[in-house]
Image 1 (cartoon, rainbow, N blue to C red):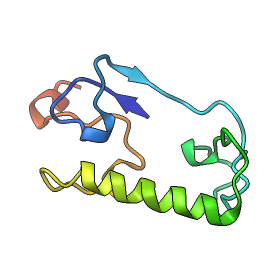
Image 2 (image 1 turned 120 degrees about the horizontal axis):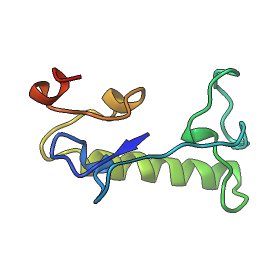
Image 3 (image 1 turned 90 degrees about the vertical axis):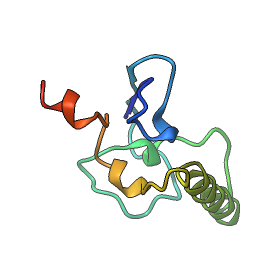
Image 4 (image 1 turned 180 degrees about the vertical axis):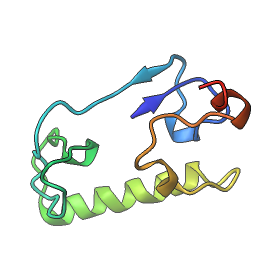
Length: 96
């Protein structure tokens, strides 16, 4: 996942510095049932503390709600970023 100080980055990916983040572990989230065995992402990361299925569902729904709130001004759709590291303006992207 990419982070950076660019206004074209979604608010949930803005950071004071450009960086890449990765999850170097395995499929360690016991609540994640549907995943591609040959792919890893942050949803596979280990949980900091054991959660029951109900606790996990509450945390998950809270995260979805907060992300939607953060992306509401201007309206944005988090599904655009599931397979994207950086979002750049068209003018900058053409240079690459």
